[in-house]
Image (cartoon, rainbow, N blue to C red; front, side, top):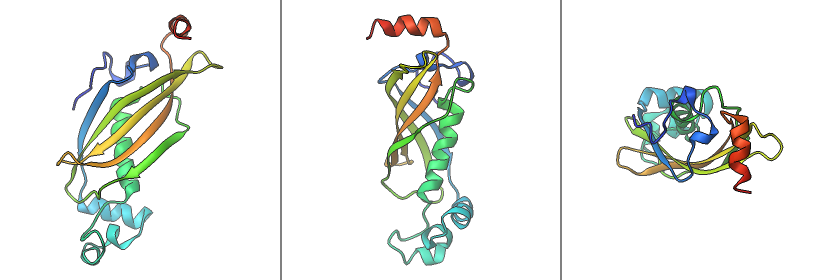
Length: 169
């Protein structure tokens, strides 16, 4: 696993550790046929997610993971390797979520994240919003899903944060 260019591990990371334009990759994580079927039956019971034989007759020509399953795998890598443990304050959501290619059994997925923007909060100087452009790629280096994630993250040192961003205003 590549921790990118971070100078700290996730448990010691704060908003000022994210550099706009930096690219980080994490994984791989492998998806199995059984996982696809179990997730599909529980959360997205469409034939092409739950029945390998009948899925062959559908437009995808076989079993594929639910897009929501792909998002769950994304989230696993995102939380374990990218988000700062104690400094993470949650998320107001994601924008522009797209499922571009089917994810199939035995695919090995890599999460590639580009730090898009770091925006200090105007009303709460101890935090800001981290905008991250996220791509999931399969073993063929094909992009299977993309999204723009937004996360509320605390600064390590509120006083240095204020001085740092005063110069940018």
